[in-house]
Image 1 (cartoon, rainbow, N blue to C red):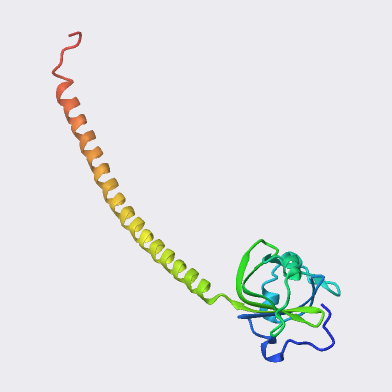
Image 2 (cartoon, rainbow, N blue to C red; image 1 turned 90 degrees about the vertical axis):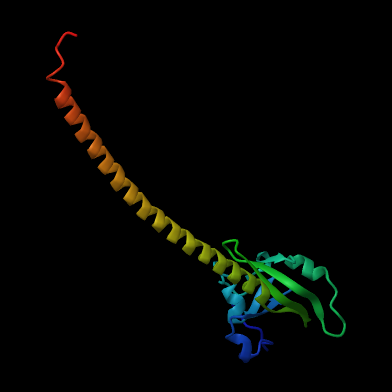
Length: 177
């Protein structure tokens, strides 16, 4: 990955994971990025001078960003939820903005904390439900073992009764009747 002559990515955010910052050419090439943005590109081949990352933009699509006019004061091209897709198809929503930066684009976004909090609470609920079901299955297994033991004892008792009845009835019953 080639770095631009003067990187707009401050060193203070270069190592952050919760914030994604990337300098992109208008052709979709990745000039520079911090660790947070690079982590979102799992499986994307980052070889060559300018890695094309247009396909990573799920919503808005990269080409749509190019059709938007920059705000004359802030230089904002897009502000809101930016959805990126890695090579495995995994979608990650970010909340942030894309700015016009000279002839390039500057993406500054953070992971959608509300989405992460919602997903974490759903995960906790599913985990709690799973634990409850495991306890229920363990209890049912104990009950099944008890029932098997009772059934086995009942079969032994039945076999013993049949043996006794067979012995008692067989000698007394004349043949041929």
